Figure 1 (cartoon, rainbow, N blue to C red):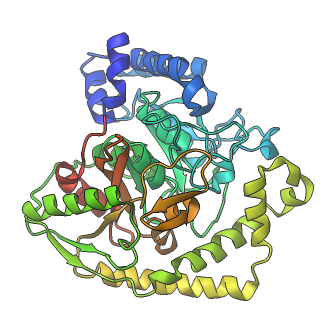
Figure 2 (cartoon, one colour):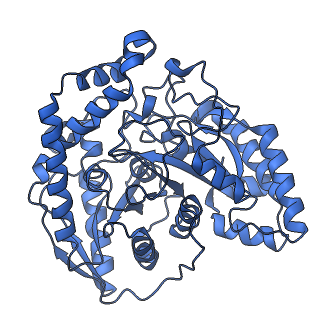
Length: 455
């Protein structure tokens, strides 16, 4: 088990799945290895709120029996996955990392959990997050912050920080998170993973604690584009499909330089430009595109998310305000001050931005930009220095991701390098509206040119 444990954090679901089917490995052994990694590491990393040790082993043994008997439920059969603790699993608490929900126990599975059970997935536990998913660092949690496995003094990103840590540290083979402004892509980038925000409403949010019904998405965090495709298709109830890499010569990528590349950490900028160079050398055509109202993104996003979040939390803010962490409570209360006319105006602005992203994609296979403007930030810090500018960590972290929650376009991050300190850096691909499958194929084609090991 030690040998498996030391390499598990480098293994993909697709690789392990094939080994399960040839009986080189068993789900029980893989699950025991994940649980051992949790036991060894999680007191330090704080990725999990709840671990389903006994249940996971029972599910693993059942998966082994079924596979041995010739019943194959697909590539997730017998694979241990974790879940962000916003997602209901019947009979267990859904804490949302908040004391507000300390008495909650789910009475039914979320829709995506039902699909994962049908796929034979082993559910290994529920992961830490920024309280109610309203934050980008995973620090404001009733259970304390998760730690970045590449540097324990840094954030793993948020809000799905625990999910990213669980995968990066070999405590699960993949995880399901949520993304309202970047909360799958930000921690995936900070922890050297692939993270997919599918197109809006492709994956059911039923049974998942809402933050902003207009912006909420669910999706996978994992080690490869192929793994992201596998999980995505099961969560959508779509048939399996092959994602073999195809030639990239002649593919066209739009690069939105104005606004999106104007405020970057120097190492992020250098890594992104090196990625562009590799793609150009491979025959990919890169052309500048524009989102004319990009400077309006923050105002539009803020008026929508805080208005809707305040509505979702209206009763609890009246009766249990003191149970929220202070930063999250303050942000929720700000939502009560947003006027209805400003919310409606933001919805109109959202439509404009969606049209502009559609236009930017008109002659391109996808858009390419960095995922996060800075590497993983120091825990406890509120600002970060970029050149001569001191920037709010929350704003700078969301700067490159939140647009695609507003527009609903599918977006995927994958590692494209690392800093001299060994911190991962991510590149983001954005696909045409409603066509996540096309984005995944594009990402698979480009993965060998973009992705760089952060091990």
